Length: 396
Image (cartoon, rainbow, N blue to C red; front, side, top):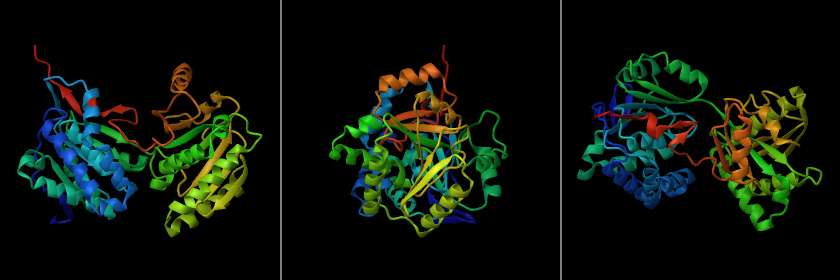
């Protein structure tokens, strides 16, 4: 592991190439397929579900699916050098961002969180091992993964060199980074702090067998607890439709609580944070009917009704809001530019497509079934990265 002053080079070094190649280059696709295989075989990686998800996502068949959806022309290339500033709360996010850059034909300088995560070390170890192979000499000069604390000096320098920046983080982080000058034609793609919700039809849930109820609960758990609700696409609120009088929602929460007790291993701080949020809502929240504490890792605050800015604060560690809505149009109170994903159960894709296109809500970038909240793709936050991170060369 090489160090340069305050910079720690986890992969590559400061001599990264500013080179653009064609999107979905064969060498890149093969590299990612080998990376996937290496993670699947790694005993260390098997300990972390997020690494298994990453390995599954970038296996060869999935990469070829992405390639098949991309309209490749002979004259399309990447932008050049892309600078990725990745978030501090999701340890594998930097890998997805890097893969986006590679698939779109770019050289990539990736800043990982200053906090050390075992997942980051395992990923970088695998990449370094692959880059030693002669067949990946081209890829070797397209990747530099760095860790540093000093934003001012190094972020300013790297910003001035890049042809594009992928900025993941809170609004304040994004605004701070935007202060650093870039080339005139360089582009910024900000992935700001967002929130997400779930939409569940109680009647459809009630009609499920116990086995299928448990499957749905597991999928909801994966969307939320797997990342401590830290992901922007993890639901923080559940909206119920259908017959609310039978209190079917209590069955949902009870089954989730049983599963959480078996699977979830929260940090100590989570109990303190959840209790503090519970006290805050109990004292200040005029729109709260009641708050159920099913365990230290599952609180459910029931709201009287949806209002504008209902979800101004994100929650985590298993703290959820819920609300029964009589009419789907009530969703308008939580649909603004900060709403990223709606996960759903009990509705057809055709109906949802019709409903949301008809109402033209301001907000919502993704509508996916429960269990797919964390399924990241090259279309993310409303951006089609396959197009934004590439350029078309017109030749007549």
